[in-house]
Length: 297
Image (tube, rainbow, N blue to C red; front, side):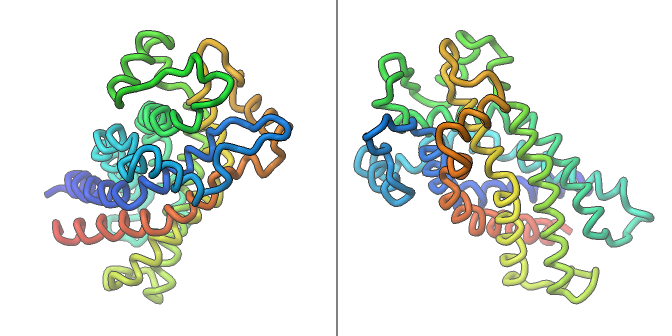
């Protein structure tokens, strides 16, 4: 198999592992991010991550934690195939000669390039996922009377295409999506390579065991979210914002309004579940990718 085909296959397997491990955490993150700001004297819908889990299971059953998984599951092959394939092609471009090991700085460049490519796929997928995940969080808000109940991913896509500006509507939130994916993937792949080289004691990391790959992948994923989390909050609130009566005119407006109404802590709503998700989900992703890549060698 050629390198592109190997990266496509390994990226697909890695993405599926990441999604299965991480989606419940992601659901809670989005619910916390998108819940309405309570009026003075009122309590928020969810007091924290554990309360969101408890209310979700009570209202929707365990399946509620996997709500919205259809959209990313349908595109996980394309998303991770593009991520790892573009990264692989970027590696070829930045190498001084074929087979030369890459430096950490070169991996940062490769990750940033992959982030540009996956932003195009991530934006509409994230919009559909966030709309489905946020429905119950938005219920009971002042906009509940006009809130739209979606039956599934295709229902969201149909509604957006019909009522929210066609294809342009599916790319609502593209700027913050790129603001998340480009620096996030740059730091993630840089940290992953740095840790692998640290564990291996040099640039040859081919002999690393599963334990080292799990630790490197988990910490690399945590670095992604630690760096870009406020951008993800802005992306989520823009993507679930009402089309006809929007609260936010854009990313900077969302930043200003969240900071004014909730302080900087408003930019970190759902941070706990995101970090809790990032370690096992990315550990699973990188381990599955590396094992599949090795098996295809």
